[in-house]
Image 1 (tube, rainbow, N blue to C red):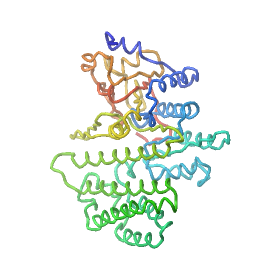
Image 2 (cartoon, rainbow, N blue to C red):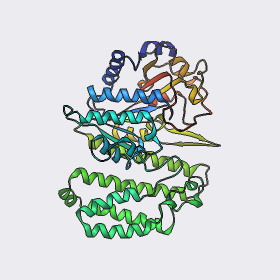
Image 3 (cartoon, helix red, strand yellow):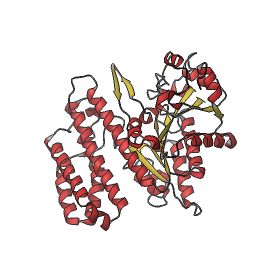
Image 4 (tube, helix red, strand yellow):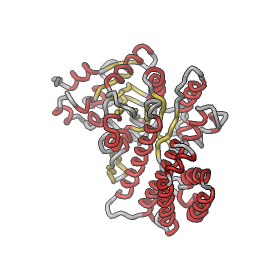
Length: 432
């Protein structure tokens, strides 16, 4: 059914709720889940910016509801895949004794210092400690081993693979380790932040790095050729985990190659780097879904731009960088098994976001009852297309460059939108 105007559609379709009201909150979540395809295994929940406290709190309550009533067994957040093993050990009641022991080493991007993330992890640990909960909740990171302005050394992911190989074939593991260690060099050379903008500062195309890429290809082939043996001597889960780390090390080396290359077109090397990062994200999430299959479904939480179905774009100085994000990759890889909810907001004074201008999508969405409301995007179906195409885009934030406003593309990027009236700044976040 086509609505006469966009405002008519919003008034008709909006599902208002409050996170503080269990009745309206749980009822709204039930409606969202009921609207999704039964085949959904991975549900994305995006954030409109890094630095929105109320978005993080909504995520926490949302995930608790999914675990308690909708068969979800894991959450994956936009943090380093290899580092998150420490957090998962913690929520399982093994390994580190306190959150303080993992808040830096178990997360990338400083996300372990966010109090909402601490509360999420402590809730999972408490849930898992209850013997009546037979399906324990897993915690994952799904980001590539990179930081905001530099990339990690490949050492950590390669050590994991070599440890696995050595546990089954110590002689072969030792031979690979000696060759790989000789080529890795100093971690600081891989992690030089200047390489992000200056290809001459990257070692990704050095003779040692090129030889290392060949060694990693050989290591992957060794694992693949001997799969029946390795699975029999360990188990399939351990083998697949080692393969995931091996493939991640390969992509990380490819990322360093991109950093080392000059490009004729402005921003081309950065676009490729962003694309590789999102491809690693998608591959990690596909692996996580396969690992959880038979146990439960997975909620993935990250910035909207990583989870959306359409192309992502980022204005970096004079360059407009456009690439295919993880959500677009997952849409092809998983099809109807992937669904995604984006978030939007009206005001955030702490993040430098004022009232949305009249006529913008955020202004129209926050005009209906709240303080939060779900809006079905329906991939644009039933919406007055001519009015959507003419929507103005609200102004952004000069204070928080991770904030992106909604656009007409948002109606096809997401299955649903969660729209908040406002948000404060994340507790524990770095100073803006």
